[in-house]
Length: 502
Image (cartoon, rainbow, N blue to C red; front, side, top):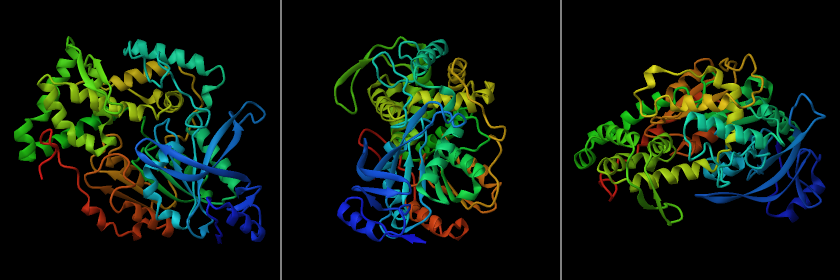
């Protein structure tokens, strides 16, 4: 069944529709100047984030129990956005689930809005900020300057990380029971929103960590799921962070091989692997003089001493921006010759843009409940760029962080007949393609597409938006003609400060 839809920007049209709408539960019924979807009333809003155009939407809030098993206890408020379909809408909306863990769906959506353009021709898109993120009772850990932080910048040791987590825990616990901000709680919130919207079935789109949420939802509510799209797949079996050092090492070797194979890069800049080892050793040894460089966003001059953490942060996050991956050989070449300005600027840009969007308190509630017990120090990772640092820091913080109860079936791979499309970037060092292969292996109606030359979060790359819309429309991944993805390719590696060779 299709339901008539009025533009959210033209309330007079919405009011006219109210007179002929069959029930107040249908989308786009106006009440008191607001648009009604199910039992929720929405008002116009704008979704905005750095680096993307603002998106017009309809927004509302919903109070839910902090502990769903104690509904008479404390409540928290969820932030919800609705992006109406542009034509006659099907009854099954799309729920987009953001990554992180700790990222806001409402804040991150503008970056992928174009990827949803075709799918929105006849389906609504619904966004729910996961509890602990965005406008849903955000759990922000603050540094000494009051800004969002993950550790104390003045004590980046495991002991310092634990002390930072204690301070954040004690501050947040005044208004929050940190045991109830994990994946299972988010799944229960999403299903409550589904019921309030009056949608019998929904289409799930999970991105990065959101793929874990989508799989957990589909396992617990299979009758309410029409299709699932997993972009940059996190298998249920994976402990978040456990494989990151090894995955990154493999991805770096692939990127460096490309530089060696391109004469303009290899001849001009040298071997990036050797330069990485030299820079890593120099930064770990310390004793480097302060470096003056321009802030890449604000343009102000900054003076800092290069640290190993600057390199680790850059390498850990480079996959989120393909241009950053293309600049790696150049950055390492410059740093190996004692010029750290570009490395510091790039590291600051990536950590600031990504770090500000992640609520570390929510991230800890997820990882400490669901992953910490399964994380292990791996001697095989000792020689990698990141080593066991991420595991050690996570375990140190989780040792002092409250933990919820993990479902005994949490690690069970998703099974059943749900139509599912998994997509991965060929060079993604965070969620490599083998993760997508693992998930679809237990699903008879699933298909995995690997996008050539791409990194993390690929739903907007090339023709993928059209393939995504076709899959949601037909609920049949096997019917997709994905030949158009072969036109994708990675950005060439930089050969110098002028960029790549023509």
